[in-house]
Image (cartoon, rainbow, N blue to C red; front, top):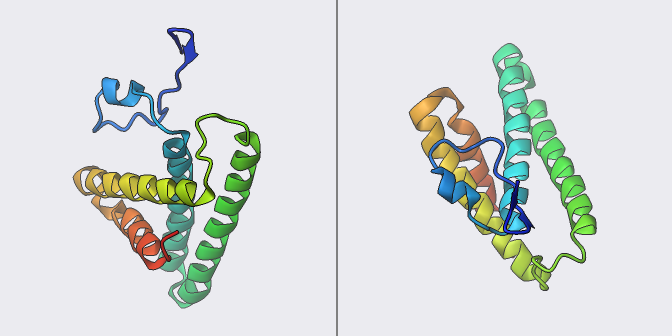
Length: 141
C-alpha cells in the first residue's frame, strides 16, 4: 500500500488481537524479521510434535533435528536479510543494538503468540512457550 509517498506493508497474518491502526503503524523492520523467525520456530516444533506423536522412540533425535533446522533456517534468513538491508537507514548501526532489538521483538512476538494460542488453539501453546524458553536460555547480546 502507498501512503503519503511511502510504502507501508501490513502484516499479512493480521494478528487478530491488534487493531488495524496498530498494524499500520510504522515500526522497525526487525519486528517483521522476528515474525519470520517465529514462523521457523512454528515449523520446526510442529514437525517435532508430529514425529513425537507417531514415533515416541525418535523424540531425542527429532528434537535435535528441530533445533538444528530452526538454527540453520534462522541463520540463512538473517544472512540474506542483512545483505539486503545493509544500506537501509532504518537498520541499527551497531550489531549489538540490532541483536538486542531482535531479541526484544522475538520475546514480544512469542508472548503475544502464547496469549493467542491459549485463547484460540490451546494445543499449540507449547510452540511459543518453547520459543520463550529457548530465548531465555540464550546469552543476552
